[in-house]
Every structure is written in C-alpha cells, then in structure tokens.
Image 1 (cartoon, rainbow, N blue to C red):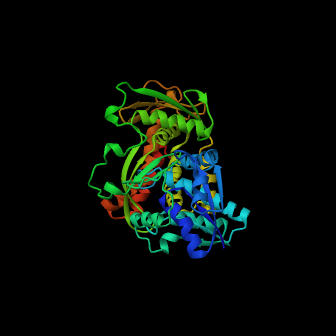
Image 2 (image 1 turned 60 degrees about the vertical axis):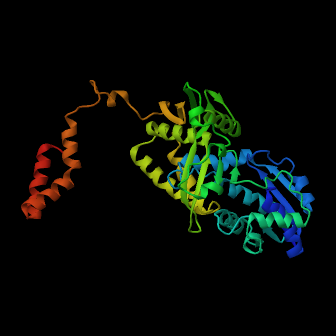
Length: 417
C-alpha cells in the first residue's frame, strides 16, 4: 500500500510515519504545504525521510492560500461564533486539495492525516478528500491506534529511536499558524475561567506595552479585495504580512473565545489575527458607503452561512461556489479606502472614501438641501406606517373593514397614494 500523509513535522506526524509502515506495511510519502507557518518547509524533507518516509513533496502555497481562500472569506465578511476569523478552517481546504493531487501524482492507494478524533480538522480534511479524491482510502491513526496521549507518542518515538529534534517535548499549548493567524489551545486554556498568560502570545505585543502614540494605516480595496497599504500597491502575501506587522506592534487582533466544535463539544481557543482584524474593520466600514441597506443585510446573512460552511469543512461544494458568486456581485462596488487608528490594542476606522460612494452630503446634511424637500417625508411616513395604523384601527374600533377603509381614504387625501 502506498499512503500520502499530510505532514507537519510535529510529534504526531513524526510518529505516524513509522506507525503506518508497521501497521499497514505502507510505503509512506509525506506531503506538506507552506501556508505561512513559522519556518515554512525548512528541514521537513530531511525529518520525514529520517523517520521512514520514502519521499517528500513540499510546496509554497502562500499566494494561493491568501488569494483564493482568505480574501474570498474576508470579502463576504464571515465570522464564526461572533469572534473567530476562521484562520485554521481556511487553510484546510487547500492542504487537502494538494494532498489529493500528490496522491494521484504518485499513484497512491490511500491518504492519511494526523488529526485527533475530537477536533474539527478531521472533518475538514476528510470532506476535502471525499470531494476531490473519493477513490482513496482514508487512514486516521488517532482513531485507530492505542496511543492515547502526547506522552504515549513520545514513548513510542523513543522506543524506535525517532529523532525528536525541533519538537518541543514540554509544550503546554497546541498551536496552528499560517499567514492569517496563530491559534492557541490546550494546557491552561482548558479552564475557561483563567486569563491567558502574557507569555503565551507569540505575535502581538501586550496592549499595555504597545506604543504610546497612535498609528494610522490606510487600506485600499478594489471590488472588496485588499490591494494597497498606505497607498502602496502590494501582492496579497506582502499586504497581509505588512498588516500583520502593523497590527501586532499595537496589540491588535487578540480574541479569546469558547467555540462550539463541529463534533459537539465546546472548546476554548485564543487567536492572534492582527492583519485580519484590520482588514475586517476596514472593509466593513468601506461597505457602509458603497452598498445599500438591503444588499448589506443580504451580505450579512450570507456571511453567517459562509462561516458555518467553512468551519464545517464544506469548502469544495456548490454551496460555496454559489455564495462566492453572490459575494462577488454584492462587492463589485466596494472600491476605495479606509483609514484606521491603532492604539493600545484597539483598531478604529476614522476615515473612508470611495469613487463610487453612495453617500451624498447634500442629502445627508442638516443644512439646506436643494434636492430634498422635507415635506415629502409626511406622505412617506403615512404610507410606511400603513400596516401599523391599520392594526391600531382594527384593535381600537372593532370593525376591520370600515376602519381600514377610513384609513385608506385618509392616506389618499394626504397624497401618499
């Protein structure tokens, strides 16, 4: 049997390589994608081969990740559980896609992953496999083996002289990192009553230690897609990297939440998403002057559906394609820029401008407006309030037909109809 393993080089996948060889007699090929995690793919090939893999396939997926997965999620405004900007969930579809591509390339029989039986990622990866490579057998060691803890995995590795260089054997937290965010779970965070220790945060400075002077940053968008920072046009990867640096130094983008996992349990996670937080704040405010009320409401409804779809691993579906097409239509005029003021952990939009703004100063002004007659509001209010007035008339006068007839006559006489 030939198996392609989604490989990170951490403890779990380092153990899975020899486990697959021992229990399946498998020829193990390791596959890894660089989506912006610290260190990228450096050293992974040597580590994989040393643990018994026959080959390693690694690829820089950063640009595709940001352009095709992050920015569409940003454009529709998806947020899961009111706080989570979906950093881990966005990376899984592209990694699953690449794993299936490698499996076909090498003529594999199966694909494997290192996700536990408690988490969301097992669902996300396996739904990607089902959509893109249903012919492959799926092997999930954490659901099969008798290793029940990190300590068991360490003992398994030591018994087989598996090198654990570069693996933190005493780490408190389980982390996931990519260009969009870094997440922290486990350890002390398993008690939702405990405040996270400052030493846990790896990207963002403590707001208390952030600069004592605010910083302004202007983000430019074209049809809902970020294209520039402070007037400088950038590639997707460079733009997100720059915003991460800016937001992180001001302590922006920390989020602490108890989320509802797909498998049914609640789990606490702490996330650092500095650049993403700036982008969400800027885009939402730019939308306030570029799309109308009904379009904005529809977009908000679809954002929640997208968040659930992505969180649950249903990226490779017609549902996502349809939602993405809708988001593209609703965002076609979301072009312009928004300026944010960053200070001590906060991000606040202070300016927004667009060449296709729907905001009309002459209409909104409390001063004299040539194009607006205040008297027109009287007829509008009578017409808009017709259902309320009808209900009140029925309740107060008992005869619905007569009451409504008199009300309609009043409205007609007032010139509202």
